[in-house]
Length: 102
Image 1: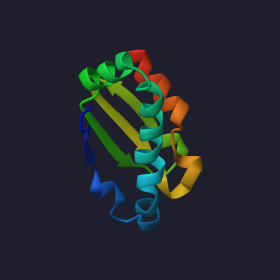
Image 2: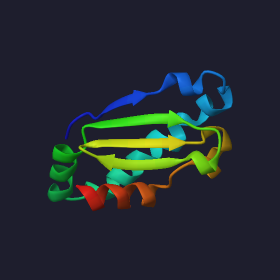
Image 3: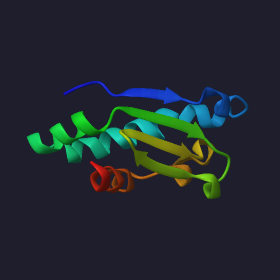
Image 4: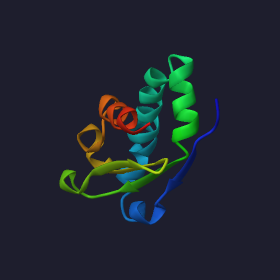
């Protein structure tokens, strides 16, 4: 129903070209898959439209530094993109976090 703005901490990717190669698939695609499930009906679409206003992405170096939070309409994901699928938050994890706060 509406575009959701992304902010990327490009400085966190500055020395990590491997991570830059995977940001789209490991965050943007995973989030899109989570939103597809949430937005299957009008109630889900409305909740996302009213509750999710911004997505912030940041690269980290290790799994231990990974984090994800959703507060005040802002979803923040810190992923270890260079670790590929080992360094991402999965669709279900993203969906569960969003649903718990929408």
